[in-house]
Image (cartoon, rainbow, N blue to C red):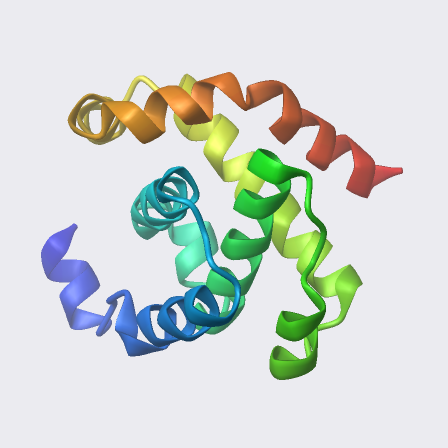
Length: 143
């Protein structure tokens, strides 16, 4: 897998880190939010249907918004909307895809997923507690 990903120049890229740095400066996050954002991005790195199919900055924006919504029930920030020019409907779609991916990882029995959940126990436990909210986000977007 690693050889294949390297041959595709598959990496997290500066765009995600740059995005998070810039927006975490303007919209301060708690350590729990940051942990969950980075854990989510780490989980998404091994999910080809997310990381290969979408722009990295889009994934970062949707992850950022999803975590804020999960933890604080805060919607898509106006500052973020103005700077990224992403429409709310597009962000909702991305959040739904990421939520589906996170639920799949929660129920996965693959070795790599189990290792991630074991190595990063704090955000993994936090994610397990948020299963109900993830399901609600998926259902809201379907309606």
